[in-house]
Amino acid sequence: DAKTTQPTSMDCAEGRAANLPCNHSTISGNEYVYWYRQIHSQGPQYIIHGLKNNETNEMASLIITEDRKSSTLILPHATLRDTAVYYCIVPPPYSGGGADGLTFGKGTHLIIQP
Amino acid sequence: DVKVTQSSRYLVKRTGEKVFLECVQDMDHENMFWYRQDPGLGLRLIYFSYDVKMKEKGDIPEGYSVSREKKERFSLILESASTNQTSMYLCASIQMGTNIQYFGAGTRLSVL
Image (spheres, chains in turn purple, blue):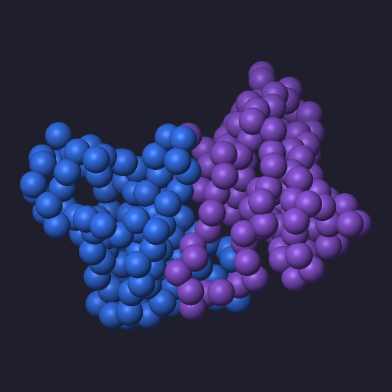
């Protein structure tokens, strides 16, 4: 997997936009960036993924730089329930027949302050 | 919504017991995974299955086995539980053609 680097922790005020950065400078041309999050004592939850264009869904927006070496996950109006560990991963192109699984690093612990 | 259901949230077992962790998914996914998650070590893949009765070892299969008799159900078996298998166990299935994995809520297993 392409290596990713994320800050260990971040704080954000409730109601404000939370911007979570991720560096993936070794990403190759056909590798997607995926974001997951894990709320305490729950399983990881898929958020969003993208290749090179910005993406938005009901949970978040993903901004990928033009050189694809970094990205930012944006939670537009953070709530207390968004407090979680956020993982940015760059898995090999889909290999569903293989046994690679997903490799999660340490992620960013996002704390939403009331 | 895709649902991956793990049979227990919390389990307490004794050393030497045989332990079954059950996982069911409702989206007809071919591929399913079992991971364990420990503080400081992240997620580690135990076993993977890409079809009924098909399985492959992940990174840490020692002490575990799996069973996939039906497409929707993937079971993790601890043949003789040991204290170093105390962990959070996570089951997942994958949406074909993507790396979108859907996880269950997890089973926190304590082996005493």
